[in-house]
Length: 399
Image (cartoon, rainbow, N blue to C red; front, side, top):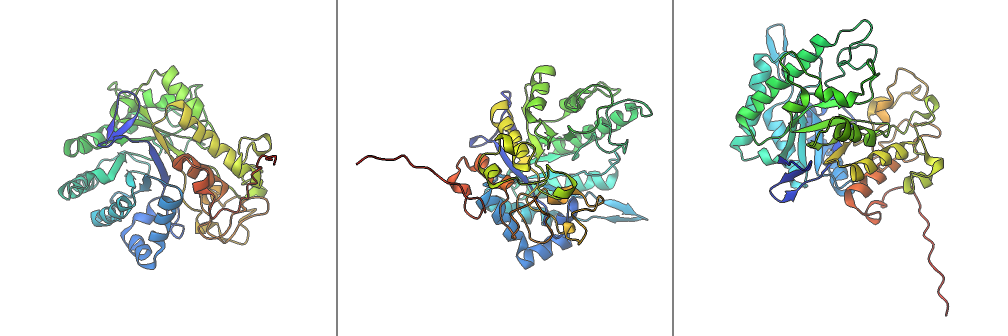
């Protein structure tokens, strides 16, 4: 994989546009649990792994699966390694056989300590794939899911200095972590692309939008943009065009940019009227006025930004809803995260009045239809299995 000077990505076959989806298995929930050795083995054996791989490939037409992987941690004196190289290699092989590479997010916590256990594990991962000629199965490695989102500063962007928070030390730590990560990866696999994610929707603490976090320098004059092969902003509220304009015009950045997370929940609607699939018409025509501020509207707005804004692709969040949503009080419980309903595919269980209308296991939602159309380039390839009926009016022909 290569990041080209014209802002695109390429592989040995030419230009490669990322058509990604975040891969979590519903039974395990969000973050790194899916790729833990015992979880992965159970899903492989019960058939659920193949089921969801098929949904990503055959319906969405994805060419990349983004996954979170927990790095080793230390408990007392023991080093705990949740995910083995063999698990990741087996999964990469299964995805690659279906035309999909992996995007591995290797750090998804809240500290910048590149200790010996982490460094050794990252190096060993690269050596394991290299020894098997398998590095081309990896699209990229990410040093952090959302590197500006770990300070617990009341939702304020962690790169922003404001009342009660000095971001100086945080920026030094974050950029320093990425620099160490880059050094490890490029030493062993210089051809492997690396990136780091940024949340574009945290509270602004200093009147500078989050896209510019990529260019904030640490004490050594380094910034995130200078250390990665492509930029990876995230956005869920239809702001993809504003972000690419900030990067291209405001920051004069000419490298590749991927909208690494985009999506929207379709429930629990009683808590927010925008958490809905909308009417059946919104699946087919999500930019109609009556569909404004629905899940398909926000997803389509960010897909449109990718098409016309100069992105090198994107990765939809996320493949399927999570089982954690299934409680009797889910539709009104403020402690139940709406993120559990951000799947492109339904899984059955708890859905709410006026929200998700596609409810059967593996059934595409309106958001999945929009992603499929964008990825496949065809409406007709994406209608099967959806509950959305689209009436076609044929012209009258005189006899």
